Image (cartoon, rainbow, N blue to C red):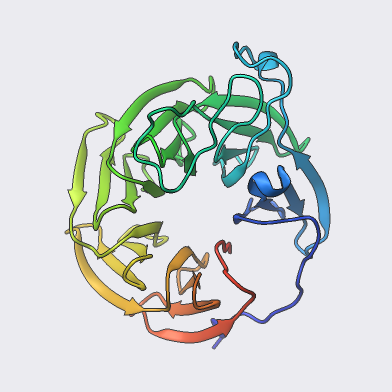
Length: 311
């Protein structure tokens, strides 16, 4: 049988500080390099650098007033749309005229902060071709499978922005509580699951009514979420508890739990649904799990403070 454990092929270096890495499904991988390098770097399947995209934009070009000159961002996360034509990149903070102060993970709400922006990148040209104003210190971004909405969790606003995919207008804010982060959307684009990291809970947002219900008490610090390919299981990393949990989406009951290491952060699932891959930030490891029973297949040592992973 095919092994679930990956084999290290290459280490990519350069002027990068990747907060996240995301595959497009078209043969490219995007790395978001925060304010430390003010770039998004794009690689091919072999790990060769294809393009470095600076995060500087003239917001006036996109009809945004109040920020003359060049504004710079801090790329955190990205998501590809269903058509595989656009990437949407969140910016931890914005820099330049009319922006500030800088966002912080230790914020007590949005007081004193200015809104940030999500950039839209065209996958054919690998250029920023649109912006959407969202909340304060946006982190995770997801596109609904029907390409209707771009969903953005705003860490310091304690809410989620719902942005129209076509117009890039924010049409709704959904209050969620302290430090919302990971998002997973069901295949019918009806429910968005949101990990609220400052709690023990996962929110369920109805994408028709925007009402919120809750999966309570899953564990300390839920951070990242993925759904199984068949949609029957929701998986969450618990940064505080050092665990990964499996949740039955029919009953919202936790049906599996495993300790993977200290501060598990990002996670991804293989296309065939057989394996989960989890980075453990403070353990400097990647855990490979059988999705069927959350059994640990292998633990791989990696470079210090791994925080993003993609399949």
